[in-house]
Length: 315
Image 1 (cartoon, rainbow, N blue to C red):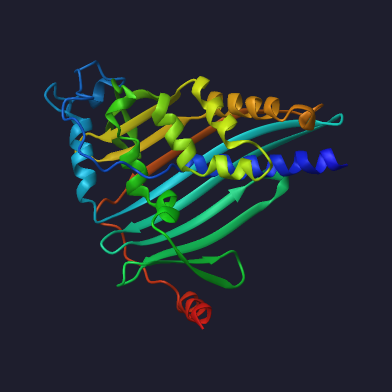
Image 2 (image 1 turned 120 degrees about the vertical axis):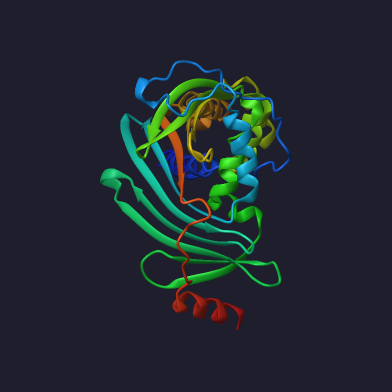
């Protein structure tokens, strides 16, 4: 029974950990090289969408520059994850879809998040959250999971995973070896398509920055051993789409399946006898972020009930 409880705890922690890591970590706001990712004029996947194509358009560099001046935007993150676990002759599977709708404003920061987690037979969870930057520069988060509001002070690092602009900036990195792969439509509009791979230290920093190692260390796993495991992981394929007309990035998708499945196998191996008879695999894990309404997002107000909870917390 003790082994089973530890196994179930590991399953839960892994689910939460990998969900967090998929959302990304702090973006690098340094200037990007203007020469990387230049379109090559390859033939479009759709011959009717070539009208806006231009060999001289450096869409990736233009997108990087535009993201530095975003005042507001809407975005939807979708995380799809399937897990299979066996222990003591019993096999359990879990298929989950997490959707996060975000409205983000900057200077000062104000974010609204509606989060829906559909875990199939395990049920669904809906949460509404807000983040607000005060005049003193400090951040307050308001959370409601269906009943009362909870308010607490948070740091800038705590809200990065909910910041659509920072997440998109992170995945516009030149070092992902992007190659132009024709054009496709995203939400009915023509977009340049790029494919690349997140490897080495970039991939490692994304996982470490998410807090994944801290969560797993709480189960008794050695953080340095976890750090070493990531050295041998394969890269994560990434696909990026940039709107042909506006040159804003409109979507990215990262396939984390192979990396997370390999990391899960390494975790179990490192646990030795504690994981005897236990097997876990991740047949699917992808995360995507679709962005829209750049500098034209509809403003919102934080509910009075949430503000009241913040005042109560201060008292």
